[in-house]
Image (cartoon, rainbow over the protein chains, first blue to last red):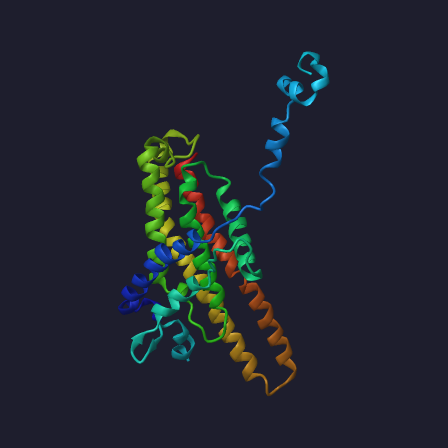
Length: 68
Length: 226
């Protein structure tokens, strides 16, 4: 069986080691997985819109008669 | 006839230089890396496949096991690409070489055992004895479990080698038989259809990668989490 011919084992193993542990890993690290752009911010918007009382002073000037 | 049958598995040389070096390096070049947010179809397919496989494989591990995710992803990518490229006619498949599979299996298995011994010594030693064994059987069972543990890397390597080699040999044999029978025409169609079916079954070479990585995963899981 030619697989048991140990003269080529060194070359094969020495080539496989940088291929597997270096090149493939570097290639996988360098693929950027971008998130789809619109999925992140929508929750934050609905979370922080709570009517704060200080806004009524600026937004409804008719509710504060002494300022007019 | 033996000489002709096994020559596809001897390491190829071009002008007496080893051609295995570019052959082993080549499948890694097929992994596309690009900096664009939106890629072409091939790159998108590859990226989606990588993410799918990553999520499927790493779901069952805790945080400590997930530090191995890059290693396992590169392992499954490398073996899958190599095996699929070996299905082309007249190509050389490096995973048929026992040397390479042993060199892949032994360090990775040793790594999982070492992780288990370092961080969870009692747990990993306790795996040598199944629960609920009667007391007189304990020494024999410890020996049996140790042997079954020590045979894991050899089994990993030999499984991959033998399966890919046997598949390639079978395709050679059936192809030669179909060619020899082409003079008598009616059995040719039967044999070529068998060869085609065997080729698609041999796309279960990819399933072999699953088998390889999953058995590695199982041992990692057992040693790490339990």
